[in-house]
Image (cartoon, rainbow, N blue to C red; front, side, top):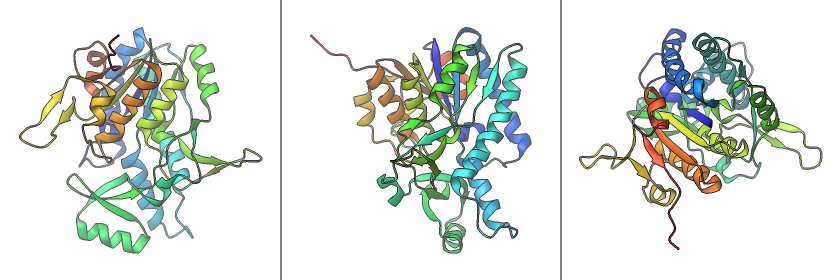
Length: 307
């Protein structure tokens, strides 16, 4: 079975953790253990988030006195693909001796006129107290919004239209490689209408929506969205909270899940199921094997129709 796995950025660097390399390596060691069992029996394509990491690089770039201007988000996104991809590739190489591991810097085509450029919603970087966040917004021209536990920077998140390197990923899979790609949703680029020339843009593509698009284009059998909670929850954070064990796309879309957290995950799973008739699931990173085998997580299945 061909499985596209989307690793959440908060699964790789937990909320409140120091963004040290050693901390991320320890978390990625857990990733390798969780995914190695799947990789023995299935064809894997791994994507990953980069919200905490790209936010850290953006803060460092903005504060660097050697720069006349901070590095743009699309280049910082490429850096995070290399950083996280290298950690994943080395760790999976050690966990899966003899398996070919390919880590590919990937670009995602977006529309220059996407309305998301006028409505930043994608959280990046660390949590701040409100006054600190407001000060940073004034100093650096950032947009901020409230997240669970504090305030964070938000950036445009245009809809992914196409993964530029899809054909290359196909070739790598045909050669038997486990492929790491589309990290952080891929480097966002626009294409010139006349020449096709690519240009990076100031945005971060949602990695879950990019993973759903990639899974569809690769004709995957299963989309596995791994995060830091074991299920999708109705009434999350309230006394009425309860886990959803399975749901259809229509049921998920009526759930009112927030844009900054579970919303993109449920939307990505729904799109993949609707467009392909395949299965998707959302759950905790440590339970990857159990989720695929129906023992954990929220299964997203096609709507049942009656004759």
